[in-house]
Picture 1 (cartoon, helix red, strand yellow):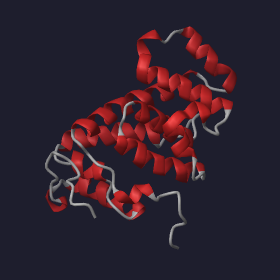
Picture 2 (tube, rainbow, N blue to C red; picture 1 turned 30 degrees about the vertical axis):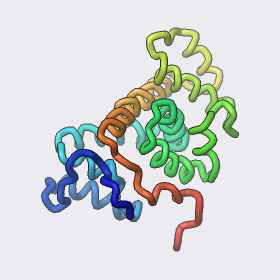
Picture 3 (cartoon, rainbow, N blue to C red; picture 1 turned 180 degrees about the vertical axis):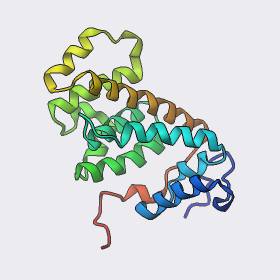
Picture 4 (cartoon, rainbow, N blue to C red; picture 1 turned 45 degrees about the vertical axis):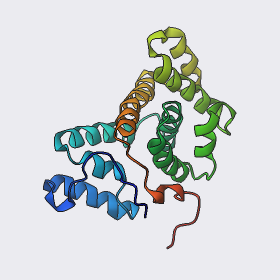
Length: 194
């Protein structure tokens, strides 16, 4: 365990939090085996914590045209473009698990254009990166590049919304100096103890 603080802002005592937040955090801990630092770092502002994770879940956990792995791939690529260590490391771990691929997250984070991904995933990430870096220039031709890969307008909204939401997340994590948990670095790389 590192002596470096997980955030420049206060980390509240778990027992002092409202019950719904305690339940959410303990549920994540039970599933992951640890509490991701972002949950603790955002917990000092309960209304924002609830809003943040409600929108996160609405984008990342729903059924739809994008797979769960594709959603995580968007997060990793755009977070790398935004220089967000926390999101690249944490969502890279989730991507490795959801894609069942030990190398995909590193490839996508470094240069998705050279990664071992499908043409569909490449088109999706091209659009997500444009939302991330140059959203004001998106026009109908950007949509037309996605349709042949099986994306519909609802899927395209999801791609854009994930890129935009994680732009917010990346900036919050960076200004608050929230560091990734050490546990994320090995997740999806080595077999879990059964």
